[in-house]
Image (cartoon, rainbow, N blue to C red; front, side, top):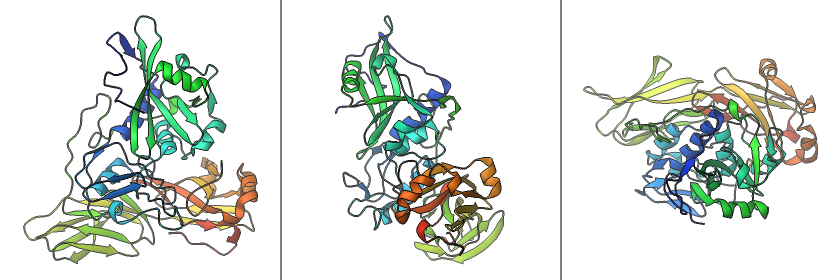
Length: 428
């Protein structure tokens, strides 16, 4: 299928046509989707995203890479910031080049990059869902509804285009300025070649809708959506780019402003030839000083939770600081009492899910915590809608709690539900 940027002229569209503006909530969704499709990056080493896309060193790339990261919960925009992703791209020894979430038992032969997105994660991010939804959950969502007139003339900005196994989001509608009829529709999607904008003329899209190849859904809570510009990395829809200077001497292996959880080893990749020390700060206080000599990797084990910064120094100069966060995560599962408990001193519990060890979950096997749940620090599974799903498939499902902090989201080590007992299960 041919596709062009919606800002370009294509398919016979002329200046006699105007763009829909949409509501404030729709505008937020459009900008967030365009962040995904318009993001530009240049890999410093070979980046294997999936079986259909490998990014080469020095290649000028546009559109976030496609990668099923449900095992680790590292969807860019959703769990990992653009800042973290792009500083990892700029670090030739980062996890993007050295690690793969396809390692057994996640995907077998399907290679997947450590960070990336997929179609449903792109749309979930654009619409501002609290919990990431899989494509097969969209048609049965309580807060999404199929529009009555399944034709192009009724489409609106931020509508969801759904077909079995795939979702996209409408990000542009061009109309005849005299008649108001729709001439073309742009939608954003994530496919194995990467995130992209697609422009379809009204006739072709109408035929797809008539044939049942697409179905249009609308989000009821669209006006609750918000948008945060990240113009240091991607300026969309009239935004002015902000200059950004990468730290070429030092970077955490997961990228700057990345998250680890207690028990993780934090690796600092050092490229600063001519520096003799790495100074590490925890909070506002100096925590540790390490003597170095040229390029090296510093492995920091068993760091207590907190906010960390580091820089390289010598007698005459110092580098800019890099940052990371070690998140305190405690999740316990008690199948005997039918409960999941959760706690963190420096992150907020967001939602619970039950999934396979690879991160694949049954339909609706997740639950977003309310304020009372967070205050109590536990939920009783039998009180949740997912309890029936768990009864049917509990033998192979693991419990994971997603926590949110200013640098992104983290999860606990998965806990196999069928083996969960009164014995405390420690998390990362």
